Amino acid sequence: MTKVFAITLSLFLGIQYCNAQFTQNRTTEFQYVQDAEIGITAGVAHYFGDLNNHFRVNRPKAAIGAFYRKQFGNYVAARLSGHYMQLGYSDRYNSSEFERSRNLSFNTNIFELTLQGDFNFFKFIPSDPSYAFTPYITLGVGIFGYDPYAMLEGTKYYLRPLHTEGQTFYQNRKPYGTMALCFPLGFGFKYAFTDNLSVSMELGYRFTNTDYIDDVSTTYVGIDKFPNPGGGKNVAGLLQDRSYELGTPIGVEGRQRGWSKQKDQYLIAEIGLALSLTSYRCPDAR
Image 1 (spheres, rainbow, N blue to C red):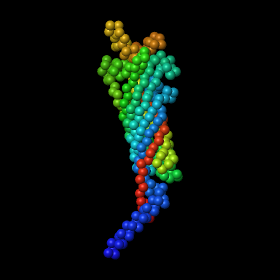
Image 2 (cartoon, one colour):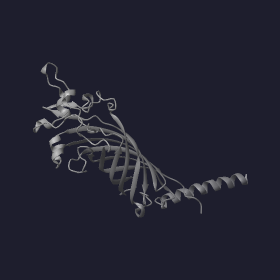
Image 3 (cartoon, rainbow, N blue to C red):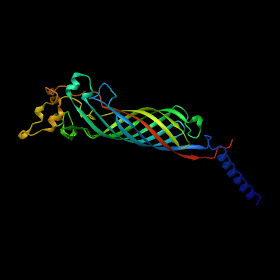
Image 4 (cartoon, one colour):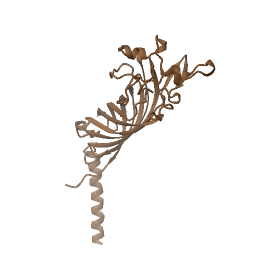
């Protein structure tokens, strides 16, 4: 009976000790555990590629996203992110004479899913004002969908099915798909202004394995590859070389149209708001 009483008393005192510690010092790093975060982002995206090979940042477009971040301690996390954005550019924004006379343009919607690792520079504990801020770096891998299009006489035409670079005429030019890989690399800051809410600012660059986000990569194939049966309008022929809109056409077979040795890329600058998914643990006995 005495042994049962002693065990019961020990359990009771242990529970009371944990409750007292939780109430009096809830914000200590031994009790407060940030298990994960869910959040949303909004910002702008910008394209870099054959139509913007000087990396001008002058035509940003909207980008939104959502993410789930799993914490592994106070310094490292894994993040699953989804983004929707628009990319686009036009030769009219370029300064070189050749690029302006080329007169090509495109727009595309991007649907992106990435898995990234986040690495904090400082210890990050949202419940502790001393550890509520940190810069971080992020890198990972992802997939994205794209389908470039252009406008002609007020009508929207998707460019991939038109084979504007002769993908059906040359054996070494295969039709490109609508999915590609991306490799995010970024830098950001985050700050917890309450135990449960934090804000972040991030600049993330995406390297890709495709040169056809803009439907421009190699050389012209010549207007003769796009006949006009019955004298009708051949949309592919009109969109593969739009220099005729400004003067003498330049799209002779073999002439440079793009630069295939460099893949297309894009940038996302965004602000995020995150909700912490937290738990509290009884501190270790010292």
